[in-house]
Length: 456
Image (tube, rainbow, N blue to C red; front, side, top):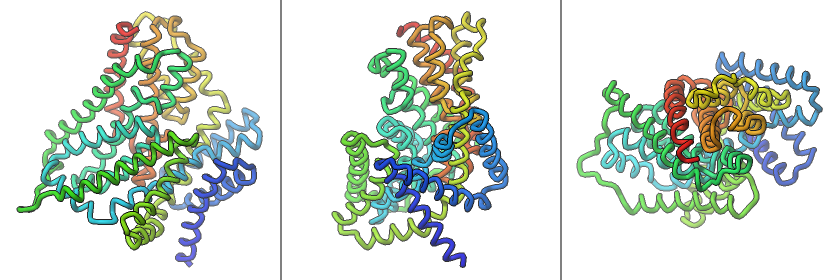
């Protein structure tokens, strides 16, 4: 009976992803409601499998969201949209494990292991590579980039036996792209509403991104120095050397995968959360046909069906509860009330006003108010001159606040995607990042208050 139940659940998960993607293109009420009903069934099925804290928190978020929607007198469609808030994100997470399948058609992973053992023996070098890669992918694909990066480097990260370090490095490297990436919604807000040129933000954005990444590398170096026994150097077997031909093929595969995503993003008007699942489903079979690896493709799909899909059990309740509560907060107008929390006396102290603005992004984000609501409300309600800062300082503050809000909050896509990839609850990442976040808030409050007027 449990075998039949498992089969039904896996097929329901696949059907949900297919319906979500179809609904994106067809936009019919029928498909929308079918997605909602199927998601409800998956949420109910996943509830008993939640960890103890989540068994309390997820229902609390649903209840709080219901109360807010009732208070705001929302109509039925708003309720359905709130419930489906993270549906496309879930469909991406369902499909994204397939995208790495071509990297297992041959023994590429063993060659990467040899490369790491001979050329990248310390976790510090690995974290530098992951930071740079996740930064670049974040620039190209925004929220989709973090899942792609995590899946690609996950096998190699196991060699260094420090999952926490790998997780924080991926999150920080990806977040650093928000300083200048045009793919982030925060950049669109700053350039369109505040009328700041994107080109004028690139130089300082690159400097700030470098500082942000350097902060992560400093923490890695500090961990190694403090507890060297926890970070042993990799040792290569005598006489082994990297197979550069196989590594070149793997590099070509990686470039082809990234190129496919870029082509899908540029050649179509589709959102990345739709492009990524489509490429994830199509790319492996094309590579399998071109490289004549159809048996390996079938084996990869079998592994995906039997091993990857069951790991998504708990994610449906957590993602849906987070999205539902966030949408309810938007409907209740919580984001619009945030700008009024700024005390007038702070305008005399630029660094403090920047820090206060950053906290207006971070603190509401911790309870589910997405930075998009906070940022939109701030630029609409608060003029930079009214709080004693120039437009460039205000722009950089919005970008930094958005980064820290999405980076630290367990309710935003950054934490939710990593949660989906690792199976850990999203609230656990705040424990890994809060000290880094505090240091970043203090340091960048000072840097922004000093550099903003010089650039303005």
